[in-house]
Every structure is written in C-alpha cells, then in structure tokens.
Amino acid sequence: MPNKPMPRIAPLLPPDWDSTAHEAVSAFPAARDFVLNNWENGGARGMNGLGAMLNHPALAKAFLTFNNHVAATNTLSKRICELLILRISWLRRSEYEFQQHVILGLRAGLTAEEIDRIQEGPDAAGWDTIDAHLLQAADDLVSDASINHATWTLLSQHFNTEQLIDIVFTVGCYEVLAMAFKSFGVPFESSLEPMSPNVRARMNNSSSIK
Image 1 (spheres, rainbow, N blue to C red):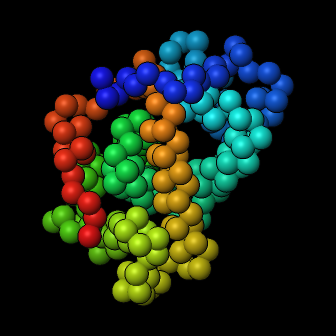
Image 2 (tube, rainbow, N blue to C red; image 1 turned 120 degrees about the vertical axis):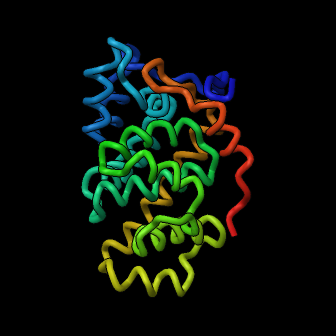
C-alpha cells in the first residue's frame, strides 16, 4: 500500500533511544515530549519520521533545531505555516507529511474546505488575496527555487522582512522533510489516518506546477 511502505530506514523508537538520541530530539522539545507521552498508547503521530532521522543523531540535532524554529518560533501564524506546509507536501506528493499536517492545519484554523482547496493551488476559487499569494510563493519556490517578483511584491505589502524570510524557510524545511520521508519509506503510525483512495489518486495525478 502507498501509505504503508516497507521502510528503507527503520525508525528508531523511544525504547531504543540512547543518550545521544535523546540529546538530538531535545532540539525540538515539543516533538520529543509528544512522542514520549504518546508512543505507548499508539498516539504518537510523527514518531516514525522522527525515528528515521534519529539513525543519524548529529544530523537530526542540527535539522530539528531548524525545524523547532519553523514549528515553534516562526514569525508567521500557525495557520499560514500550515497552509504553506500542506501545499509543499501536496506538490511533493508526500502522503505521510500531508496527512500529519491535515490534523495540524485543522487545529491551526484551516477549514476542511480550505485543505481541499490547497490541493488545487493558488488559482482555485475562494481564496482571499493573501492566501492565494502565499500558495503562489510555495509554487514559485518549487518551480524556480525563487519567489517571483510579482508574488514577492504583493507579499511585501502584508509581511515584514522576517516574515518573508520565514515563508521561504518554512517551505524549504518541509520540502526537505518530504524528500526524507519519501526516500526513507517512512510508514504511517497506527494513529495516523490513511489518505483516502480518491485523494491519493488526485495527488498522484496532479499536474506539475506552472
């Protein structure tokens, strides 16, 4: 099944975390605590992705320091972060990342209708101007590794310099994670709802961005 790949890198789970792994995962305290508090009851979504990275503790510590900024101290709102993360997850066809962030996106204030519309992109009917420009920024970064001039000019009317930087790095952070999750064959946790066949087909058949 696409949502249950055979792992290329087996996740390192909490019972097997040594002091080096604990030090690495402590660079992202919220993720560490969520996994440690929920893994025994099967509720630790994200545990397998985290566990795959912990096979390389030095890299995990460095990356999770960056990921912690994007998740916890970002100058953008949680809703905007999730909007960007869901779009890059969709564009990179990362089921594991997308399904994790459907849950987080709803918690951050996105509606189910907006999450469906993210799949269609910035040109879908119903977006307000700012949301459409944010989605276009994600598309620009994937298509050309740069937010195009028109998109940047429009976003600059609403976001300060730190926020503009965070837009780029939020998309970049989760682009890297999409690459990692797909390359490592990270399996879904039992608590993570599989992607529906219709959504999966839509994701796999979605056209490349402009």
